[in-house]
Length: 364
Ligand code: F6P
Image (tube, protein in one colour):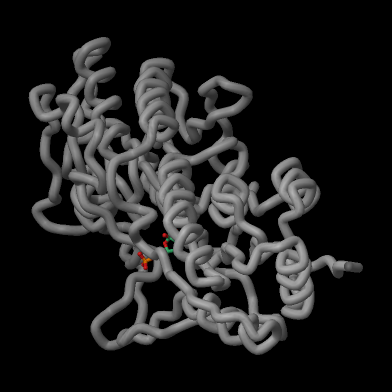
């Protein structure tokens, strides 16, 4: 039976989203003869009247799209339809309008590419409207449960690692402590992976509390070994020593992480006397071409999502487990938030390499 598949991207963008859109279109058209429709700006496209959807044709999904950063559909990480901000500062439930928009669009099934927050919203809409829904996990933060990785994470880690590659020679040239602040919202996965890959001396993540004195002691140890510079990677969500988060407010009053590397630069400088500099990597981690891992993840997940539709399996999330693409219960995946395992292989291996998390004291 012919099907019309709707696809949308939701939440912050990342590398690999277009590769998913392409893979879904190729599989749907080539294997099943089904049509794929892109919904614009996440759920906003279903809130608009007329609904903003557009057929994605085979000639639009050539190899260029596979490589392209961002999302051709647009996305948003604001405006939860269940609590939609109004001009007067109040909030309104507009979920019924989105469900109605989906009905008006004539779509049979929805594929949503998003992080855990988006997936919770999209599942809520699907449940409310009786929409056949399949989730594909994407987020540079890599904090969605039941999948080893989410689309976008590997590219973000590669960008952060390259930043460390570039900071290391300038740190060495000037005898400085260089601090790199990376994204990751509430989880330290990017900082941890990039810190190991980029040869950091200190990795600071929200999952492990640190003391400035321990970082200073680590630096003394480095100096004793004959090196007079150091690399520190900090996750944006790492807290200050007193346990408070570093946040900034934008003009709309919305709070987000920001400022931890500035704080650390001052504190480390005071504690060690070393010259410090900080770099905030920001959205550079989200844009640009996807790396190999994200291209592969995006494409196998896209194909799997369409095959699940053919099987008639819904309310599922596509996941990567044990070198295989699988599908898992969506509600369980949303509930299984994945922060850094502080006793896991990566943290233990980092410690084995002499990398400090600022939680250990140094005896010499
Ligand atoms: O969730 C992805 C992410 O990039 C986080 O790592 C970061 O904290 C946040 O989005 C930034 O959001 P925005 O694009 O709204 O600044």
